[in-house]
Length: 189
Image (cartoon, rainbow, N blue to C red):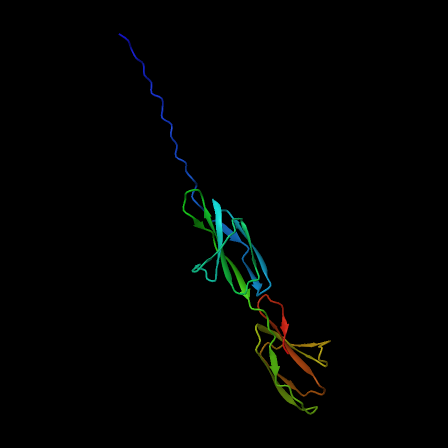
């Protein structure tokens, strides 16, 4: 009798598993002044390859704009309105994942506006109502000076849109200083 000793070789197979996509988080949200601005956004803590970035004018990303950027940084430049950003990340065959949202809040540029109410009065007892209109931003103060260039201007602690000049004894010039958010201050006419 012959005895046959058969051993079967194990069958080798493998299933590759990709880690789940993780969108990560974006740092760099900022508040800027409209038009001339630059904000660096950086994506961290993501799992997978960056497919693209997206921008939108609302936090829900309806009508999102695709940005052909596959790096972990994006610079938003010269925005004129508040804009939201996110990155889209994909790990292997897994579904894509969105990063957290970064917001670049845009303040309208400061506009000083114009003052109405200029008048000619008699020295001594007088009263003239000045009104600021067509400005963008918050009124920081009013100023007066004895010359149109406002050298040695005097600050007036008034943050309303009207100021009453009273009992002047010499010709005096007035203006208001206005500031919108983080934007530079602007002065009125």
